[in-house]
Amino acid sequence: MLQIEHLTKIYDPYVLAVDDISFTVPEGQFLVLIGLSGSGKSTLLRCINRLVEPTSGRVIWKGVDITALPEGELRRMRRRVAMIFQQFNLVKRSSVLTNVLAGRLGYINPAWSLVNHFPRTEVGRAMQMLDRVGIADKAQVRADELSGGQQQRVGIARALMQQPEVILADEPVSSLDPATSHSILHHLEVLNKEEGITILCSLHFLSLARRYADRIIALKAGKMVFEGPPAEIDEKRFKEIYGEEAEVVEIK
Ligand code: ADP
Ligand code: MG
Image (cartoon, rainbow, N blue to C red):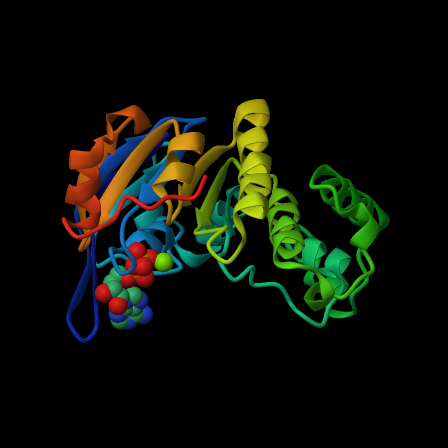
């Protein structure tokens, strides 16, 4: 269980990006964050694993206050709370396989990684993860030669190398076309439903949120303006979240 308690982030110079947000995520939930660009989704997700340091408030995961963890323990925690990024964050010139193995760096002797030599068992595991997302045949290809959807699958495989209990996915499909978006979200759904990995995922489109979320949290200017099951977001709620002017234009 993940508890967010009165989380606030103020960037310097003064930008109140996340404003006193509290919620709890039960283990195994597929939670989707929605909200306009600039509403604080990335900041909130990054505060959870402290890629961004919260200004105040606490993040408690399985009874441990993450916000108070010293560096070494924080690193151990980050293995269990993997992250997937909008722009994939792959090492473009490296092979797909090397990128996936990078997800495992916290576990193995850093000397191995320096020379790009990984234990055989690790390579085997990386290949298994690539197989799970359907791109084992691309293992030796340079990351930047893949399509966006394929690159995001590498991102998922890299996250899986960490054997995560939680995946934080920050707009993982916002640079992808609708069909590819569904295929990526489907992979996350399988990990959630079949392996019980808790997912916190920000999404731009409400239709995608509705399709994949067990529960939706909406942010507006850093505040939580909705929390509940997808079915509760009707047109009125939609306008509260996205503004009166917002057109209900949706991708299927
Ligand atoms: P979203 O992911 O919903 O688009 P963000 O969390 O990226 O929202 O941004 C929330 C607010 O914080 C915005 O006003 C943004 O401009 C601001 N912001 C984000 N990152 C930084 C930063 N590193 N420094 C200063 N302001 C930032
Ligand atoms: Mg963002």
